Each structure stands twice: as C-alpha cells, then as structure tokens.
Length: 534
View (cartoon, rainbow, N blue to C red):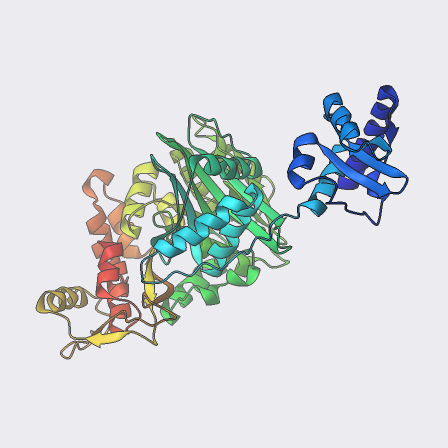
C-alpha cells in the first residue's frame, strides 16, 4: 500500500514538472545517493526546501519541490556563479528521504521503566523525556510495552492544570511514571482516539478498544490490546486504558488459584447443561478473567458457544463472539441481542455484563431452557447480588432454581515469599481474626490461633515493595434448599445478611473467611485484606 502511494506521488510530481517546464527526477530510483554537505548547511536546506543531487565538474543539480520559491532559485544561481546550476523537480517524499540522510533522526533509546521504593523524581524525568521526543504512535506503544513488562493492569492519563500525569496500576496500586505537557498529551490522546475509534471532542464519556501491532522507531514490535475508557474533565480528556494479555494459556481454571473445594464447585457447575453462573465484584476484580477461564474450559468441538460483549476483550478460536456497543438510553440493546443469539441454538452463552432487568430476565429464561449462561454482575458480595436478582425477577421459584453459582471476588496483593517478615499481631487484630474464625461454617475445622503469626512485606533491591502479583479472595454461593426456602418469602422481608447467614449455614465461606485463611498461610497481609474488603 505504501509503495502504491509513493508511485502515485511520483507520477503527480512528474506531471507537475511538465506544467512548470522543469526537468523531473524520481529520487526513489537513485540507489546510491551522494551527499554534498559542503554546498549547503542543513539549516539552509530546511529553510529553502532544496537539496543538492549532483555536484561535479559539469555543475550542480539542485532538487527542488513545488514549495521552493523562485527567489530561492535566483539566490542559489547567484551564490554559485562559478558553476552551471540547474534545478530538477522532486517529490516531497524524495526531499524528505534526502534530508534523513543529511540530518539523520536522533536514535531514541527506550529505557525500561523500573518502579522502586525510592523517590520517583528521576524515573518521571526519564520517562517524560522519552515521551517528549518520540512520535505519537510510539508513545502509546512504549507505554503499553512497559506496562506489560511491569505486570500493570491499566494506564491512567490524567489532565492536571499545569501538566498531564501518567500513572500505571501494578498489583492494584497506582504509580506515577511521567508528566508531559498538554500539547504533547493532545498528540497522544489523538493517537489513542484514532486507534480506538473514539472522538477527542465528545462531551460525554466513551469506550473503545485497540488491537493492533506497532513497529516502533527502534524496529521493535509491540502488540497492543487495550480497552479504552475516556471522560471529559475540566482540564482535558482523561483516559484509562485496561491491558489485556493475548495469550490463551492465561485463561484456564488452573491459573485462577482455586483451592480444591472451590475448583470442585466450579467443575461440578459448568458440567451441567443449563443454569446461570454469575461472577460478581467491582471493576478490576478479575470477573472477566474468571468467566473467560470457564469459557476456555468449556470450549470443545461438541459445544456451540456464543458470547455477547461490550467490547470483545479477547478472541477465542471456536467461539462465536459478538461485540455490542450499547447506545445511551437503549437499555434493551443487550437483551435484544441475547434473544437473537438464543435462536442460533447455542449450548453455552456468555453475556459480558447483566446491566438491566430485561437482560437479567432473558438470561434466566435462557438458563431454564437448556442453556448454560455465564455473566458478570456488579455487586458487593454474592448475597447482595442475589438480593438484587430477587428484586429483578420477583418471587419466581423457577427463576430462582435457574441460578447455579454466584462467585464474588476481590484481588489483593500477594506477599513476596523471599522477603516477607513474620510478626505477632496486636490484640485488636487477634480479636477481629478470632471473631471471623468463630463464624466459620460448622463443616470447617477452626484453626488454632493461640500462637498467631501474621506476615508483612519486606524489601529487597529487586522488589522494594515486598509484593509479587495478586491473588483472588472469593466466596462461592451455590443455590441450596435452605436458600430456595428463604427466597420464597416476599422480597421486602429478605435482606442480604439473611441470605449470607443462610448460605454460611449451608457451608459457604465468605470473602472474609477466605481472606483469613490466606492471612494465616502468609499469602497476604492484614492491612491488605482490610484495605480491599473494608
């Protein structure tokens, strides 16, 4: 495609030369370009839009463009009175090719970003300087590649009054890495907007997706797979870009960190031919990863699987995936798509998110008619999610029986085993942990905490913060006879706490229960658990 554009430009330049009565030269066919820096300085060549093509005893041939002025040619002729001077019309691309030889672009060194526990002033200065000297596409590719290397989950571009701050989130915590000018940020924003098909002038929030491969100035290639969220703020358009790893091997149940009991629950549920499975939690809690891992496990030749997503975040071979851009004010859009999909006779349907009553009811109806339906839902816990579902569907025992599993989860930082430090917690922490243990379901043996030891992060040169990755804290609510009996009551009489208590009596571990086991095993810290769970 680029070759065709260049040929077209040369043909246009040749025609223009004929009109102007000038000789034309196709510089793309000059394989051994000679340089004559003694004739003109780089500054003169830029200012006059002229380059010397040939210089010998017979004279000087200058290459000029359609923007080179007559006054420039007159000046050059007078400057080189001792030589025969002639002018050849060349294309703009030909001129630019020569100028890259006369004035080679400075080599950009993309230094790896290192997050340390020390002051980040030097890091911010270094990354900011790099972003200031590269082209807009390379700014995005550099940030994306570095975020992937650091294991970041998202990149934040935030407009402040005096500058634009760039931060990346690693293991749930934000780290500043650069400050750039608003002018430079507009270039980056424009590049992001163009790639993700959003508008830089929209007065409302927008959502986009970028999937592309970029070759940077240092010839390295970067795969970019980002979900883009933008919102107009008072100082400019703020952007958050969520990173996705495009390796299918990352989406397996084995990599979810499920213990043997949790894994058996999931395996038993997804083996069933129908029912509704919900992954519950706030944005960034790993819900989509959980569903994709289930989907990848279910993805075999004997099943037809269809997904409805906004947007499609990862593409699976063998799965029909439908991208749905829900329009403002069109709350039935998702439900309409789901009804259309069900006519295609799928075995498994994944709905990216249940956002409204119509989609919830349609998903439940689908799960009653021979489909396994997977979806995400925004709620604080499994009990809160079930309370909201009851509000939507009312006292319908058929709908209630369709719900197989509600899995709520949060992500907490995992301690680095090589640096973590054991300590004896204070009495308040002991008391809190003891109360949580006392509320464990009767089927679980209560751990002995008489010699309780917890762990806190240490520090090393390689890992100054003492954490390494994230782990999920989960609760799995499976529909039991006791829950069904409770849900027969009028919804006004049912509270989330009643649902949770009933589920715990039936053997469910809450997220707090799950977190305490991870505390006792030294996987995370007391402060981290209550930072995330409250």
